Length: 330
Image (cartoon, rainbow, N blue to C red):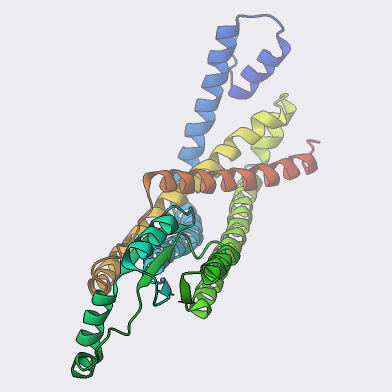
């Protein structure tokens, strides 16, 4: 009698119909089925190289745009973080405030949670700076008394995150009895906050749109593959294969497409950042080397690969599930 070769479909049907059996054997069989689907789907992608490369390239460009914009916002946040330290609240103390009292006042400000740093500029220091940079040194020397007050330069903590908290801090300083005048360019802070908020929202919207694009592109690719394998799917249904079994290799195809697209996107983003690195380093030298370009970290790279794979698997699952409901063997 001729032996009938057991296909994975027949093996799964037999497993579902058998109520007994050893749990370990079932687990091994389940593992073998997934391994077969995993590597067979990879083989099918390799067999149609041109179509696979075109699909992966399009997806990689979409993913790299989202990742590149994310890196742009991250680098802008680093830049604005450096700009925060260059923006200070200047507290001009009253003329009758002594140096010792000003020092105690500065210590009390340092204890505030929303203050990063406090610098005390004495009258003598202020006078030397004024003589050096103002060009009126000879006129100052003619004065009998130093007219400049003691100044406290306060660097707030994270001024870009909560503008209202920063304004409250500035108003509290103005209410201090030892403070004669407090000033800060609030308009500059508001503009920078608005720009960063717009950049974050824009990056989020771009990522969502490109994510939807990845879903549709992957889904359409898997739909075409399902159409080309229509007869195979019909035969599998006739021999009793479940929808989960039929769907499995297509999901793994979606996984490989998303994974390779994420890898290609990482190379695209990295190459783009390396091209820009030299120009950015030259610009950084003009600002005392305070700015260093950020690349995708190991965690961010893993997250990108996970998200790209998940989106592709989701697009594949939606399309295959819908097509299997419409496909009925005659």
